[in-house]
Length: 335
Image (cartoon, rainbow, N blue to C red):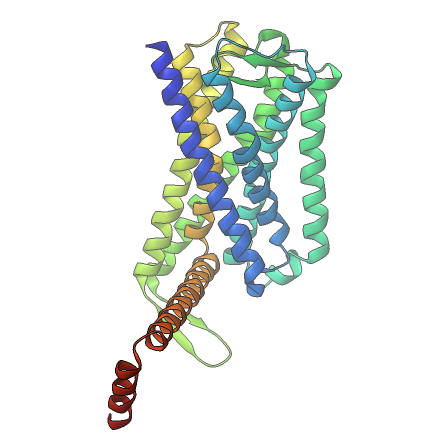
């Protein structure tokens, strides 16, 4: 039974890793191909996309390998385990922090549209991005310096932060500052945006550009509200079990059940696969850019297919018998 659960865990991790890599590569490709997406806050999108991509390429395969080669474990004090734990903590923190500030950017664009350009400048966005990574690097380095510790977790099949009573100060510092507060901030901002959207839908809204004004139907606001509520639910579903298990182990000094620990770890790593789709769903400019990119790709594929079909027809015509070729040419001229 335990072997079957480990294989199931490996299969789920492979699926999550594949979706994370494909989704984040799609976001990065769309950003590179569409100049209209290269805004002042592009660095925030690239930050959490690269963090989630690195999670799918480095952390998830490590967990799959460990679950299939169990009971072989890595020495907790070895360089491999310490480096893997450092990378996991760094990527988790940077992904959540960058996604939170990207949500703040969206909130500012909606609720403070007139002053948005003066609030989010290129220089301020660059400084903010540097501070985010500096904060995440500092958090990830503290266990290497003795404040907290990394160790191999047999129930999670990963080298990660050691959730024990001895590490309680650092666990609480990291959990509150890097995870809990950002997630609550995102959910609160989404909730306020939904409130504003409902208010706008009730009284009706006209959106104006340089040429004319047009009415925005209430269904548009309703659709955006559903997407944002779904985003908040996904964040909570992915992170709440992990937070609960980690706090239980930290304060009780007891290890949680293997199935519970593995499931919570898989859910939190799956969030790196959901983030790209959250961005595509919640931001119209990314949705339209993805549709345009897919349309261009389809047109190119169709053009290549027609070109190959035409070349094959020409080759077949040239290799036909002279009588057939002459008859075909005559029919063509008559037509």
